[in-house]
Image (tube, rainbow, N blue to C red; front, side):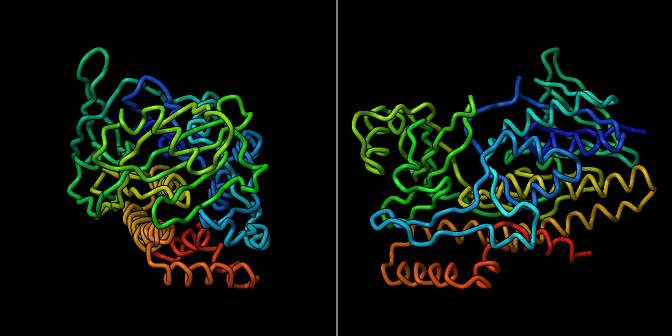
Length: 399
């Protein structure tokens, strides 16, 4: 059987890899970096993602490594809790009625370790895909390696190589959308905010400086809190990262005696974009290569993982059962439709709400949240959407 090429060894690339390995489909995973990067990125796993990983025996390990979160807060920065969302309301809709806080690099480690149980594949670090060509029977990837340029051939290539994807750039597709005028600043600290009334996950609205606060296991699993702020896109990173500026930001959010021990400080450009097609012949894209969005709501990585399960299911039927390649067009329709209907809409809405500057509209939004949490049926309907269950069901309805 011709091998499949995968570009990008992030959580989506590793999920594609494990799903192919379990089916006995050989692959070559090509990653430009020299290791799994452990800088603070995605850290939220939603219920349908846990359901998908449960089908391949990974979820128990994920839960053992992560923090189970049964509720989250929507807060006003000046006035405290607006609404406390109980994910337990979803108990009849999913076996995992909670969020799991688990950093994406730890998921990569888990999947990488599981791949050691399978043969017929190779994982090549410091191998960056720079371009792809295809013919009637396969694809050829041009790859930068420590030994110089090389080419790799496969039956298909799946681009899981991020927002600047070279696989997508080799396709005849657009990547329309927009870039936000501010960046996101992420500060990580061991200081424990929970005794002060915060939930493990908090979205904190403010017309001047919104923020998000959540806890992940951290490098030693003892817990690390991340505080996210908007940051001036024009300011140099060294100015934003300067110690007094960092301390002023985090002390302005929650004052405490003495300085915060800030373990990491990261700055990200933020975009909302969806590729115009996820397939061009034998070239396919998934994850950030196909769609990018702001991280409020923790949806981006999860959506990419859903891409991976959908695509590998269809590709397995084509390669192992002789199914028609038109299944790949179904993948495109399903995942691209819900990216536009759910992922983009919800994440844009999340940001608009958290930074709302009109007092009347903010008050109206807060009243709607309070009405939702006061009515179990309304709460369930709302959580089905924001916990990504509704989007998965919508994708399954498309043929």
